[in-house]
Image 1: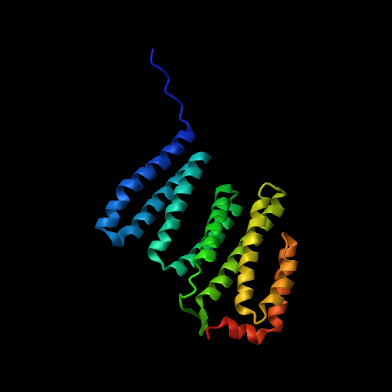
Image 2: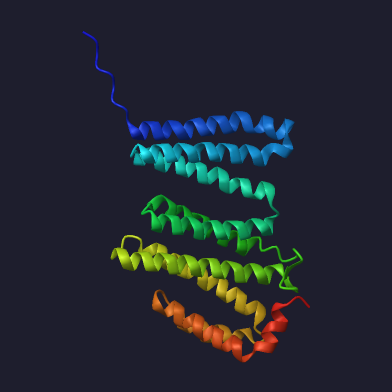
Length: 248
């Protein structure tokens, strides 16, 4: 009498996916980097797209475990492909937009994996900003004005973290759940960090401005009140702030 076929275990298949990716990366990538260094970006993109297609197939088959496994692999490869094509400060700009996009997708389609991937990218981006801020990266032209990269990056990442905070807070209020409250607080904390550095860079009297704004910056609604107070303070010194923001 033949033995029954063993049932498929989604967790084992998910582990196999990661193991296949790891083995393929360890074996193939060093050879590609040595023989075809210009194709490293294409290698990461191709592998990421393959796993993205696998995530789409697993989602249609209602296999959530495999979907999460494929999405983790796809987003990891596509995210790591960016610094192979872009300069370090351009990479920060792309990753900031990617974090907001993943969070919006996760909230729109009720997929927790996207929301947590957005949080991970945001934390990595903040660490990169704090320790590798590209202060000597020159300037970027914006509407005919030359703006120092560090100031532009501070403003850009402040907008990104603020957008993430707003998106996740709106979604959490609709869902009426407190399970992901740390994410909302985390995005607010990142926005506070970027706002602090931005004000320090562009405000002629940063000490007074930071004391006023940081006293108003708390989780939740206090975040919005703090931004308003900071905007008012900067508005009162509009001319000086504008000259400080532009590249001297």
